[in-house]
Amino acid sequence: MMSDIELAFAHPEDRAEASAGAAPRDRISLRDHVVEADIGAFQKERGHKQRLRFNVVVEVRPVTEPLEDDVDRILSYDRITESIAAELAAERLNLLETLAERVAERILAEPAAMRIFIRIEKLDVGPYSLGVEIVRSRAEHPVQKAGDEGMESVHPLVVYLDNATIHAADLSTRLDALLAEGLPLILTVGLPDLPRPVTGHKPTQRRVDLLAMEQNAWTLAARDPRCVVVATRTEIDWAIKRGQSVVWAPSKLVLDAVDGPKGSDPVGLALWLAETMSATALVVHGEVAVPAGSRVPVRRA
Image 1 (cartoon, rainbow, N blue to C red):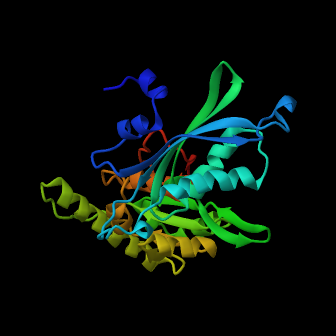
Image 2: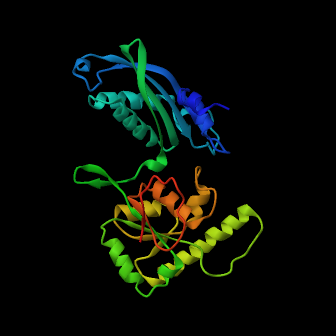
């Protein structure tokens, strides 16, 4: 097993392999791709092309149908080199970090791409190479909608409601306050205060728990007509683009996710959804524990 220091200086392919879960994805890679570009923040770098070396690893969705040796059924290596060329041609950049972000975003727009590791190095700055390395996943990219100046990102507000809030007499007033923030609203709920089957088997118990949360989502929907229950990413994206509020039924997204949460803790699921949707924040109602290490700000209501 490689140490953290070894991984820090390892090839992106080694880092991808080391960070793979129990069910690692397929990967395609581009090694030692060298191009010339005018890039850099210093005046002496302007107007002078320098060599950049790209090493890229893209984790892709498993192919679920026969390939039939058809290049159109895979993420082609050409998409990686074309993405690099397109971003270098778009405009002159000062920072390798900006270039890496834009290349990652372009490649992750491909339906098969799920996570990308990019290392970019300058080869002509001295008797050494200088570079940056980033890791980005599809989950970190927000919903896009058409705006006055082209496509713009939409960051919803994800809210976890405990059972006391769901059944509170002032539920509508609380929803009014949340909607007053002017953001698309995704409401999530936990387990209902009702008995549920206990299977003694983790995979089946997880499904029972997820279905129980969905029952609770329908309970919330009965309390206020603005609480429309949705289950798919398409439904959520559609609502977000139109600034509408929804209640999340978690089973489909959680069970279909390649890198989804492993348990069924309701607040952990809400946090995962907030990260997946690139939410502006997770608002938590109730005295419940929130997992540490969130990439999304967490607020207590």
